[in-house]
Image (cartoon, rainbow, N blue to C red; front, side, top):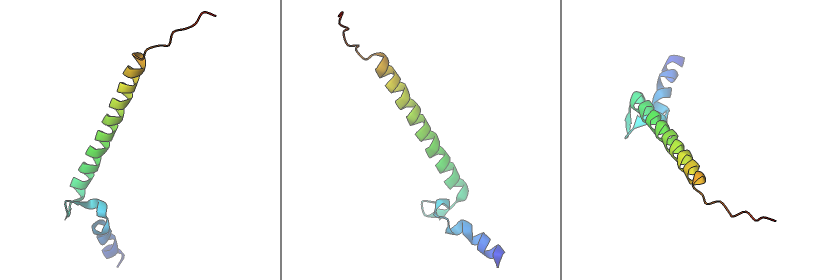
Length: 64
C-alpha cells in the first residue's frame, strides 16, 4: 500500500502540472526559467538603481 501512495504523491502535487497536463520535467523547467527571470530582473533593478545614484545631482554645500 505504501508504494501505491508514494506513486500517487507526484500526481497529487499541483506543481507537477503544466497547462493542465501532468509533466514534472516541464514543470521543473518552467520553475527554473521563472527563477532565472526573477534573478535577471533583480540584477537589472540593482544596476539601474546604482546608475541613478551615480548621476543624482548633489546638493550645493554651504561654506559656513
